Structure formats: C-alpha cells, structure tokens
Length: 108
Image (cartoon, rainbow, N blue to C red; front, top):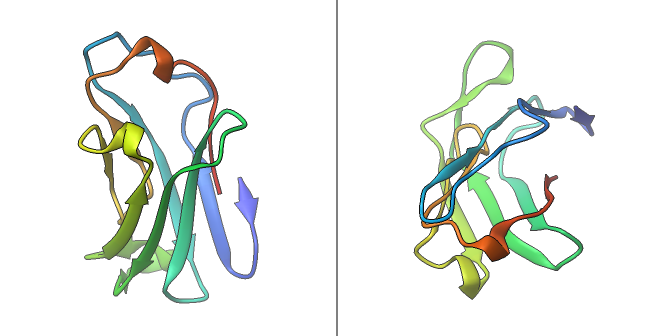
C-alpha cells in the first residue's frame, strides 16, 4: 500500500497467472482525499511506462472511494487494443496475452 498526500493505492494480489491467448486482470483499488485529477502509472519490468492515465471528474463516496470517473490514457503501442484501464479503481485488464507479457508489473 502506497500513501502520498491523501492518496492510497492497494494491490489485491501479489501473483497473477495468465494463459497465452487469454485475458488477465491486474486488480488494484485506490482512495483519494486530495481530489482529482489523479495520475496512475502502470509499468512492465524495468521498461518505460506501458500505461499512463489521468483520472478525473470522479465522484467521491464514503472514505474517498471514487466512482463515475473518466480518464485520459496513453498506452505503449504494444498494448494498443489489448489493454483496458478501469478509472474507478485503477485496475488493468490485459487481453490476448503473449508470452512476452510475462514478468513483473507495478503501479504507482
């Protein structure tokens, strides 16, 4: 769990397994006490950003849980059409998995 200026992100699973050709969800959630916009960055291994999103226009529920969010996202071309970002919780869905997708993913 990371905390910074009223922002908390929680990673729900340490290990996620997927199958080539299938989809996998990288589940996280976050709370924001400092308002929006919020930047969420997903990385793969030591590579540069694979996904960068600015989450905005969220309604905040109890405890700062966001809902009804919109986001502007930029994906590396490797993930175009294969990745979906969920702005209300920060999770990432990877579709049509490739062997080259194996490795460590991080979110900040």
